[in-house]
Each structure stands twice: as structure tokens, then as C-alpha cells.
Image (tube, rainbow over all chains, first blue to last red; front, side, top):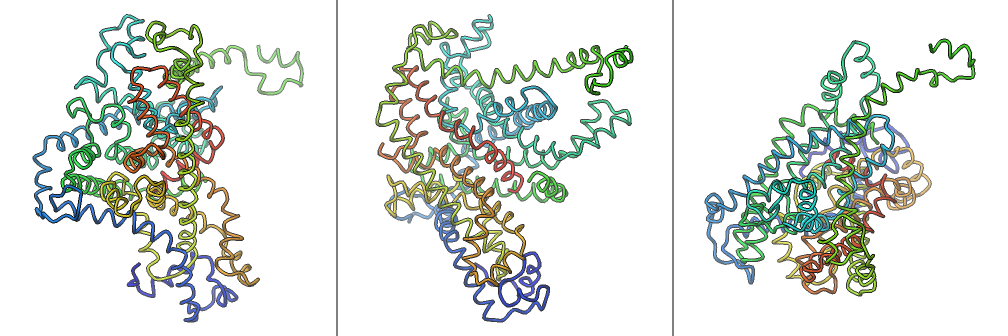
Length: 338
Length: 298
């Protein structure tokens, strides 16, 4: 709670508040000055209403975040209180830790896969399902369904489907005479990441598809009609009408995809626990391993702070350079969807 | 040709029936690839789920000898033994309890805060709102280490509150953002009228605002329930004793315990999926609406 905001800010915000309650409400649009007593009472009411949320948020979100930052400067096993201060050692160690550097590289690969394959695929499905087709509702519901399932169910299910030799995937490949294509899947150092990406696409593309469908519904049909009359083919209409108008939605979906990749844990933990030999390890898995398996809480905290900083820098940069110019557009599509 | 058809059949032919057959056939031909594509993708999406369902009715031997066929004979013991087992129902019970408690707490605290942030003028309001929205970027994982230490200090390990409270806290930002947007759109005249009739701020909130916001409350509750139901990392760390294991933790442990009995694991997966999919079928609109709304707002 900061009380440093000037009084003028308060009065600027009055118009979009609806009308203030009580005495002033009798003269709508009247004097901006409210009696001091009412101001105190409003402040008190607002305070009481926000206390539960503030207490929860402060105790269980802000405090742990701050504590992680503090602990990252110590060498600490997790018991008692941290005393062995090591300055920035945990952070310099990050830059020499092949596992952490590998996490960054693998994260980058997953993001690249998503942007190049998963999101365009989701877009294609959204465009297909945006037409009038028989069974459209069923396909939509089916494509989105895996998003509802927990990561653990998905992970266990696919670790059985991709079991080397006996799993469904190898059996299908064997049945169509493509035995050579199958093999190690999650157990191979070079195959684990692509297989994981397949599973992620199965689980998450429906979510992006739903976002795009919501966006597509906000594009007026007249624009397509006008383009058609002007002689634009279906690809041209997609390229010059649909794509530009969908841009705000696409940018948000890219943003969520990147943040999701940075925070990936459950699915990988259940499928491979980061293995074989770190080849599917993510930042969160490294943090978990160092913290809860090796009791290097200080170093693990440094990883979580690094993860937070990466998310934060990305979010701020994205907002500054990519999202800013179309907040207007995003807001209007949001309104239309409501 | 179509002109002839029109004149002979007469005026009772509605315009949409006058499309010539050749056009219809051409249109069908054009949409054929679309249908084939959708059908293929649909098959890929549904195969893992159907495979799990059918495999649950097989014995583990049948799984490798008869992968593609229907079970022969149908083995129901995988499902029935789970449905008759205590641990399975206990995990469903604790998942449900934790999900409902999380939703109540998240939505309750968020609604109060969103009310204050939407309809009161006080100093620091925007700063406060920004702090909450910043929370949208804090992933669970970042805070999990200190959170664990905090819960241990307060003796909340192996206690459902150790999962409920942090889940509620991390659910606040999204819920507050959605609800505040909704509360702002309720006309101020309503509040004036209520106040003139002697309604206190809390009375207005409780008797007028909440009932009006029922659709939004439904949406955010559904989001909170699904998030809690699927959460894994936190219950995994908090519950070392089986007493409070939630469904995801239960599955992971079950997989470790019965690693060789694949058919039973498939049956377990199907039974664990069922509530989520049933919930999806019932609350589809809130879910999709909420998820897309939450995404575009966040």
C-alpha cells in the first residue's frame, strides 16, 4: 500500500468509478470535493475489502519471492537459517553450469519449434474451423479437450504410448512397415526433445486455436466480402485481411507460448524427469533437482531468480516493443468477444 | 437449366434450393480436403484417449499381443478394483475438497479486492492494482522453494491448507483482473440508488454487485477449480504422506508402484480423466470463455 500518489490522481480517476457513493452521489457530476469524513470512510472500506487479498498475496507470493532473492546470496542446505553468505557466487556459477546453459538452449529450441510449427498449425485449424462445416463444434471441443487434462495424466499416458518397442507408437509404425522410424522416443538423447514437442503440440495447440477462433470471430465478414469482390483469392484474403486483423491475438498467443515454455515443468518431470542425461531438462527441473534433491537451496534460488528475471525482461520488452502499438486493437477485440 | 427447373417446379422452391447440382458437387469436392484434414487431426487427437480407454479393459499380456484389436476377453477387473479401492476415492475426495476450497477462497478474496479496486477512489489504488497484475508474471515455480520453507515453518506440510492457501494466492491476479473489469461496467446509478435506499458499501457488494456478476463469478470459479485439480508441483512437495494425495500425485505414485501392470495404469488414467472431461462437457462455455478472456486480459 503506497499513499504517495498525489491527490490529483485520485480525482482524475473519479469519473470512471461510477459515481462516488453517499452525499456527493445526490449531485452527479457535482463538485469533485468530497467531505473529509466520507473520504476517510471510503478509504477505510476499501482497505477492509482489500485486506484478505493483500494478506494472501503478500504472505504467499511477495514474501517467498523476496526470500528467494535473499537466499540466492547464500550457500544454504535448507535447514536452520542461511548464514554462509557467498555474494554473487551463485549467479556467476550459473554462467559456467553446462546444465543451466543447456536449459536455456533447450528452452530456446522449444520456443522456436512452437513458433514455427505449433502456432501456425493452430492457426490453420482455427481458419478451417471458422467456416461453416458439418461437425465443427465436435472438432473444436475435441481439439481443445487435451488442454483440460492435467499434465500428469498426459505425461503418464504418452510415456506409455511412446514406450520403446511395446508402446502404441512403435506398434503402429511396425504395422505400416516403418519400424526404422520408431525407436527410443523419450529414452533417446536426440529424440527426447522432438517427442516431447509432439506431446506438447497435442496438448496445447487447441488452446491457441481457441484464442485464434475468438479473434477470427471479431473480424467483420464484410471485409472478406469486399476483398472477394475486389478479386482477392483465398490466400490473398488470408494474407491481407485475416492475418493483419488477427495480429493482436497472434502476439498474445506468442507471448503466452514463450512464457509457458520458460515455466515448463510438470509434463517433463513425469515423462523423463529431465533425462536422459539432462537432454530434456528445463530451468524449473534444474531448480527442483538442485533444491529438493541436492539441497543446494542457495543455487536453486539463484536459478529461480534468473528465471523470474528472464520472464520479466521478456514480458517488459514484449510489452514495450510488440504489444504496445496494438493495445487499442486488443481492447476492441476483447470487447467484441465478451 | 436452372431456369427450366425454376419455371416448372414453381415458386415454392426456396432460393437456396435453386443452386445447381454441379455447383453443389464442385463445392463438395472443394471442401473434401478440409474434411479429410480435420478427420485426420481428429483421429490423432482422439487415438491416445481411446487407446487408454480400451487398454484398461485388457490384461497386460493382451496389451502387447493384441495392441490394436478390441479386448478379448474384456477384463473389467482393472476398473472395478480401482473403483472399489480406498486410495483412489481418497485422492478424488481430496482433489475435490482442495479445488472447491481454493475456488471459494480465490474468488471470495478477489471479489472483495476487485470491488474496492473498481468502485472506490482511494490513494494508491492504481499502484495496488499494478502490484496485483505484476503477479500474473510470477510463475508458481519461481517461488516454490521459499514457499516450501515457509509452509514448513508454519507446520502446513501434509496439511490441505498448505496447498489451498498458496493456490488461492497465486490465483488472485488473474481473478482480480477479470472481476475488476466486470465490476467497472455495472452502472454507477445502481450504486447511487442503493445508497439512497440506505445500503452500506458491503450491502451493495453482497446484495447487488455479486448477483449481477454471476456469469463472471462462474467463469473465474471454473478456472480456479480446473487449475487446482490439475496442479502437481505443490501437492507433490507438500504431501509426503498418502493421506492427502491429490489425483495427479496419486497417478504418479501409482505408476511407480504398478510399473509392470500397464493395463491397470491405463484404467487409472481413464478414471482420473473422467471427472475433468465431464466437467469440461458441463462447463464448456465458462471454461473456454474464461481461458480466452483471461489470456487476452493478462
